[in-house]
Image 1 (tube, helix red, strand yellow):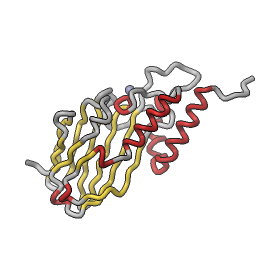
Image 2 (image 1 turned 90 degrees about the vertical axis):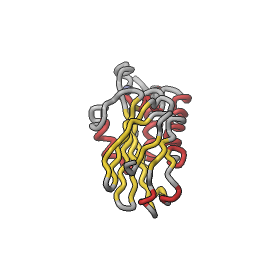
Image 3 (image 1 turned 45 degrees about the horizontal axis):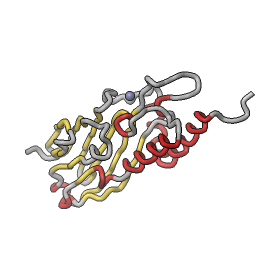
Image 4 (image 1 turned 180 degrees about the horizontal axis):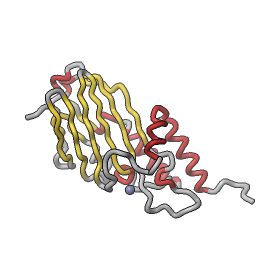
Length: 196
Ligand SMILES: [Zn+2]
């Protein structure tokens, strides 16, 4: 008879607690994403993520999504304190929008909301199976209110420095008069919002 929770179960419980602290608004989305371990949009390819930028009036939303491995380096629930710290650090950095995106000052954009969507059971790791082959994704959404959206010519994506597991981001832009995109890399990290 088991009287003590296994270390794995304990880690998972803590992991859930952290995520609950920051992802309350996205419980439904997490449940949806966790349903089959994959998000509906995008293909789960390690090293590749997706970044969607939507400018609608004064509202700018940047949505970032990619395999958890791109951000954390693994996709299972943390198995020890080092992995727990790694996940905490990633979640913290993902909330730091000014560190991830450089927006032209003239556009006067103020961050109004950040939400992080990470799987409650990253990779579905548990006692029953060895799930090393399981996959999980992380998504983050940033909403800005821009005082002068006409000046939003581009956004520089700086997150490659913090997340070297992200080799490229498939960028898409929807803005007045423009629908386009570009593949972003550490050496080519500018996403044009207005056509040039
Ligand atoms: Zn994966």
